[in-house]
Length: 598
Image (cartoon, rainbow, N blue to C red; front, side, top):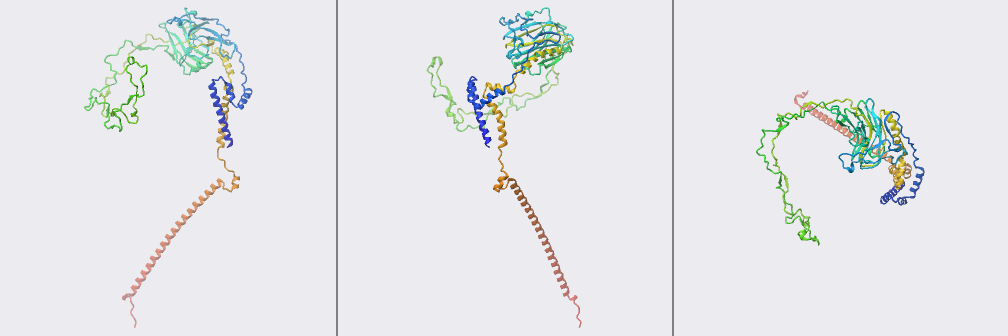
């Protein structure tokens, strides 16, 4: 019991100290950590000092950066580790139909180290400015032609400052005679657009390709279905993520983030609008006949309004059974002028009009059920039916919903190989962003999955390993947090002590049973012995009651037997008496007398 109270007092004291330390931390906004430490107990300070020496996490192993090198044939590979924009062309174009002040592509690009990088020497392309148009591009080593090999495009993105509204997608610029990277802008023809984009709470991962109509020669954008996966984390966690698009000659595609598939499908079935138009279309010249009846139900023409149907009856009527409450003040208004109000000194009646005191609730009405003219409350009119309408019946002339007839689609075509897109010869970034410092790195365009995986392992994989090595464990994070906020030590102690306190409380709070020795000292019966004796007494009493009942039954039975025997004896006695009397009467009769002998 003493241990329980000691634990309770200790926890109460520690909780009070924790609350005081937390309040002081909030009041000082973290500027006076020394004052909080002074309020803590000396024991906590000693624990803190010893913990800093013995429990400090070991230094994170260093991950040495080495620029990735392609392990196979590639069409494009860029790691920016040279520290320059060699091979990249900044656009000097202007957007059409835009104000001159914001039409220029004057956003800045730089090659920089990533903020808080764990890999010294690992550089990337950074979109430096915000609220500007940015455009930059680079030529492939040779044009990519869609034939019998897959297309794989892969690159890394890190939203170092998060992202409010903006994109980080790439465009694969189509091979055309008019292509001029110096004038790269939003209308420059592209074959594929791929990558993350976000504005507001709309998180997207684009995959768009431009398909050429073989009949008209016009291009139309085809959008992949939206991924089912939740993409929000990739935009908000400020970590480097790897985006991969794989296009196969059989028209299948896969979209991966951090080497995990988040979307997949087929170019023929999972694009909007579809690649191939329908075989038939509705005839634009077909018109609905004037006598076409689309009404499934019509009013019954034979229905007649009942004679007792009153359309003029009101929906609400006054309750004739209502009675004015007693004490209703008919002559008192609900509101009266405020007697304490005074006209302001600067009130000008010529400008402001005649001054009137503001209205307040009539104080006389507070104790009364109401004031003013009493009116009966309104109730639903039981005779109200509203405007009469004939009932609806099935329309015998119903012909269904009219649709124009189908005709062969004059623009129909069937492209069974949409994978064979327009060749592209450059990769570009044409972006508008309200957030700065978007980090791009390790672009690669190739045809072999193993080459892309090796490139990812040497680039993004190294970043991931470095971040994992630098992240402290749970204990390290708790220690670091406690160093910034010393009052957390009290929380940690409470977290450990509270379960111990509860265990002791539940295990040791039961009533202590006296030992057998104490019963011997006092000659008091032990609880189990007393219980046994009570049970024996109860059983004995029940047995005696049963024996007594049996004895009573036996007695009753014997009495009944005796009674019946005595009754039989009496009847036999009466029979003997009757027989003797009868015999005596016969003997006395003259006929039965014997003659006397002389």
